[in-house]
Amino acid sequence: MSKDLYILGAGGHSKVVIEIAEDLGYKIISILDDNPSVENIFQYKVVHSSDNSTISENVFFAVGNNINRKKIASRFLAPELNLIHPSAVVSKRTTFGYGNAVMAGVVINSSVKIGNHCIINTSACIDHDCKIDDFVHISPNASLAGNVRVMEGAHVGIGATVKQDITIGKWSVVGAGAVVINDVPNNAVVVGNPARLLIKKK
Ligand SMILES: CC(=O)SCCNC(=O)CCNC(=O)[C@H](O)C(C)(C)COP(=O)(O)OP(=O)(O)OC[C@H]1O[C@@H](n2cnc3c(N)ncnc32)[C@H](O)[C@@H]1OP(=O)(O)O
Image 1 (tube, protein in one colour):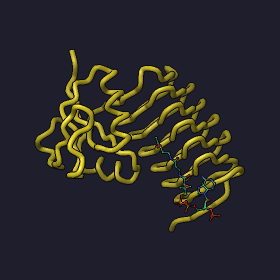
Image 2: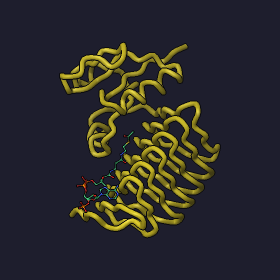
Image 3: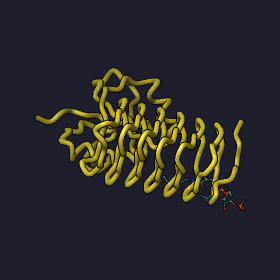
Image 4: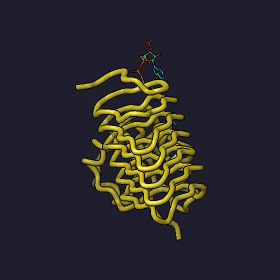
């Protein structure tokens, strides 16, 4: 029996999330987004209302930006639901909170802990004992070695590599293709190989 689901967010990330939900047998009722310029995604109508009263609690936050995803999570109730693509290889000893999207081809090895509302994007690789806090985005083809900590709201860019035992600070960004061999402080942007500080936000 299919289960009803609303998708909150009508951008590119939402398209990928919708397809995972379809593959998992969910029945998508509608897409919710305040942006009036998007009327449909695929065959689904976009409802331009942020009124929580019209939707059930079966809503998944498909918003790519970590800060915006956190803002939305403070306004809507979310079910204890994770959307994990059937092709992802996830260790039986991985633990998840809720609201996480795990895309095609992801590998998550033993004893990883993943919080809430994270995006583990296409073909990312998260090795043993990593800890991924809430609202994190691990981009496509990024690789985390063992025992990496990624703190709240951080974004690991596409194709980045993070050495074992490293901590990526809160709301920091690891640039596309970076190779991180030292801890990254909170609110920083690092780029390059080896990764160097580009910006330190206050
Ligand atoms: C399915 C999906 O699409 S998921 C999304 C995947 N996307 C990503 O992973 C993107 C990650 N973002 C990046 O890599 C960005 O370039 C950032 C966040 C690191 C920097 O962005 P901005 O702050 O806008 O920096 P900006 O583009 O102005 O560049 C500033 C400088 O850093 C350099 N730079 C920017 N990004 C990188 C990078 N990834 N690697 C090396 N150098 C970089 C630029 O060349 C520039 O150098 P210069 O001052 O010598 O000219």
